[in-house]
Image (cartoon, rainbow over all chains, first blue to last red; front, side, top):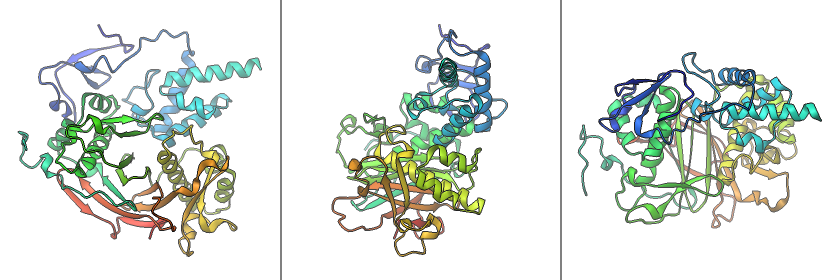
Length: 139
Length: 308
């Protein structure tokens, strides 16, 4: 059984607007989540963590999503959530660096190069921010 | 050689024109424009070249254009390397691995009838262009950016945050905002290309720890566009850390590609290159399996610095 944090999962016949799926397994079911098609055999490696958030507050995650949306000019129909990977949203290195700057400005923190490298998802960024804000507060 | 059964007789691996490896002093650059690849059949053919893990990566991208870009990047790197093989190798049979710092390289031992080659490559892509650079014997890093790319922050605050002091000074000395933006983008691509050539990752070579400038700019504040009128339009890198970084080992080239992009190429100077010879680059525009066009010497390739 697959675990997802998406609120709705529907099974649809193999389809993709680019028709790329024709190249894949002939008889397999594709999962469509938020309009993105995943071939069923790929489920295991496309790991969607079941995240129990004792991590960052939802407001922090939301703010990060907002900053990311703006920087990457993401279409309204593309969902951005804690699980979203920056690379999968089309962020290149210049975008990533701008996103980090945006987060520094928004939250009044300073992110070191090494930490910036470890941020792969929105959740990672939110967790790091709260960590830094907390440290700043207790300093 | 076994021919593959396909939807169309045009899209076969044998459509890849074999290439001779670049010499030690040369760099080859191949690029694809996504808007020139429209055929779904062709895209499906490219998809067949990818192993499961790469297909999954393509499908993990959020949006059609991003998926197409990711697919073309893998198709370009696989078909490009396949061209240089002595025996006809299917792009599908190539295997890749990452070095200890995460830089991708070819895993020769995994390929059937392997002929290890001193082939180095590096890719970069934007929404509208995908490029792959190839060298022999010496590591290479490339970076491309759209000429018109705007950044959200002020150039001054961005530079102060990420660039070296000398670079900040140079950029702030430019009064025309448009020229300043262009110089910023060029500098970014050069710094990225250097870090990618080093292969140590962004945090292995933080941008603040080195300066890239034109060789002519040692005393006066001459930025990259102005230096092409000087005799020595070489681009050089200086380390602000300790001197064990052998920065003299690296050479750069900066060009305007396809009228739309800045492309920076950094490669280690070949040990046989005793003098300071500029980089020789051959550039091809390609639609893999369909057409290749040698574009060096045309308007598609305009030297900005560091080239003959």
